Length: 308
Image (cartoon, rainbow, N blue to C red):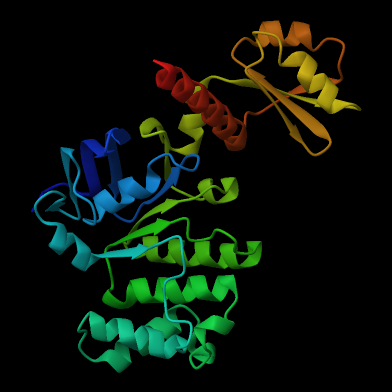
């Protein structure tokens, strides 16, 4: 067992599939009772990284611990203490909520199954729907069932792979309330997501693109680290304005948000000069501005490295 207080502490993880380098020198830390948001475009290696952390995949190189266990040599011990929720709903559509949970409890060989299942139903607000078939549940209720199944063994760490994809905003908000309640009880959470409102609810964030970890820290520190100055333009013909401005070297990105256009770059004086003829004002750079910037930069980097 490691003496570290971190739930996850890994260094230099690499994973190849054939000649494809999917995860590159990944170093990551998640504290006890901490929620870490794992961000990045599709195909960035997030799912592969999560599977290495919970013992489902062995890294080709690198080292580290998950819940104090060595990720290379003690994967069975890790699996016992981790709840892993996949992107796709993977329970039995023809069984009720209670029957699904009871089946999972039997697979885990849990003692006092009825009490354990009743507790999970109560904790996740599923008691009134216990007899409902899984196939008749909405996305939000299926998500809640999947989380209840993850919690049957009272795991110390939850690894959640885009659990709220396709779920309505109300259900997502309820889900996050449940995650923060669990974190307050000492459960650590690593969650991958594409939603910026969810990312802002995490204690820390890690941004991965094409296998490379580009940024890690609080939302505030990641925004500050990119050193972007952002301006908002209002008016008509924003698409034409965007196309005109993005030709200039000082403009790192232009993004339309409804009836406004966000302009970002690293040289505020040059940007101010370019915007003189447009109604504009400086605004705080948002996490979404930075997310889009990192995504576009990583795509360019991938393209360049691919050509080499």
